[in-house]
Amino acid sequence: MKYLKWILFGLVVFLAGCGSNIETNMSEQVSDFSFTNQNQETVELEDLKGDWWVADFIFTNCTTVCLPMTSNMAQLQTAMKEEGVDAQLVSFSIDPERDTPEVLKRYGESYDADFSNWSFLTGYDFETIKELSIKSFRNLIVEAQPGNDQLTHGTKFFLINPEGEVIKNYDGVSSDSMDQILEDLKTVTS
Image (tube, helix red, strand yellow):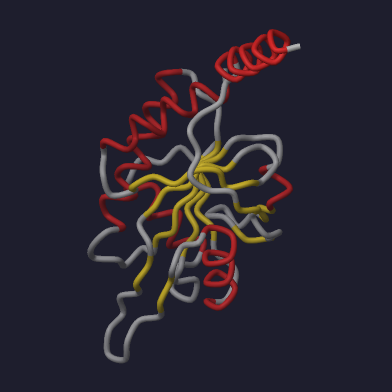
């Protein structure tokens, strides 16, 4: 009986190492949503089910962290194409009043975004995106202070599995994190 326990333990360890698992640091279910992308098309959580996706929160007139974040997302998209990784990218605007679909399209184009797998979302009010960001992604968003048009938000990128669960976050400002995201995507999609 003692040997059977050790054999079972060894089998569990072996099988755990054989899967396409990655180290995770989150476990949050994404709340259902129905928003509008840069092409004025509706994008719902249900549309993303079955796909791996990476999300971030940005706004187009940001003068600080959104610039490297969007640049990093563009870098990630290019690397995904080069490596044949099939996943979706989603950038949620936290300034939906200013970031219309037309504004988001121009913004994406300025980063050479390929809209076939990168959606820039808007079409909601600030409270809706704040609630989604905090409850589903544990990502703080704070309204701009009077006399200032700069909002405050977290700078993480989030990996979401095909079931709509946020399983990992990464530093969205660091370009080095894009290599880790790519490696994780290669592991989970292979």
